[in-house]
Image 1 (cartoon, rainbow, N blue to C red):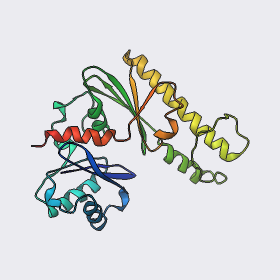
Image 2 (cartoon, rainbow, N blue to C red; image 1 turned 30 degrees about the vertical axis):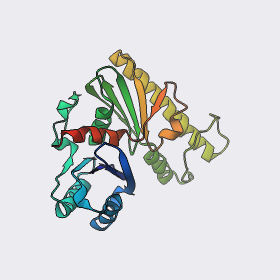
Image 3 (tube, helix red, strand yellow; image 1 turned 90 degrees about the vertical axis):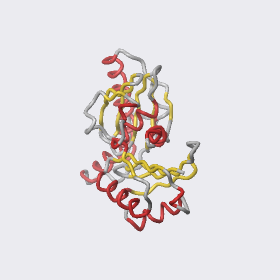
Image 4 (tube, one colour; image 1 turned 120 degrees about the vertical axis):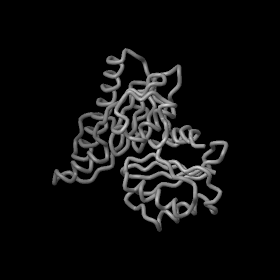
Length: 248
């Protein structure tokens, strides 16, 4: 059995995977709520016997919480808890950017998809909205745009007359009330941002791409973009599964 995790700025995902690389259990928790007590409860949900675990691998963009998790496992098991940058990822993908600066989740996503035949743009609706460019076996880098939820919340915090709003697809561009106006601006604004960035990537690289989307708002946008979309909510975990083959 293996335990894999994705520590994001907002949410952390934990999964139990068997030797056939099948996901058996999964659980999510707010990253800010990670502590020894909560972690112990979540791990006991994943496995009744931690001694059955043979590999532990995380990707993390929040070092202090990975450090906490690593200390937790060091007290519970002799199995080493790895972060993916501890491993030789260059044996899986050619990384054409500053290795230290690119997020581990973005590398895991790229490794999940890379092959010798196809090109991908990976669009992740996370705390930030990120675009990652994979051309065959090369990770070329990407774009970081403002995250949708953070942008919505910031607008509500800074503008006294704009309430907290849940984003949804809206058909009319021109709205007749504040709530609909914000929903239209964010929905169609992000559609325009996404379509434009994809076109600019194509122009700059002179390549065609498959678009893979993931993350919290991927359901909302998957049917409204101009390019055909592949929806893959497990892309990061599948990347971790692939990377874990490097662990002896």
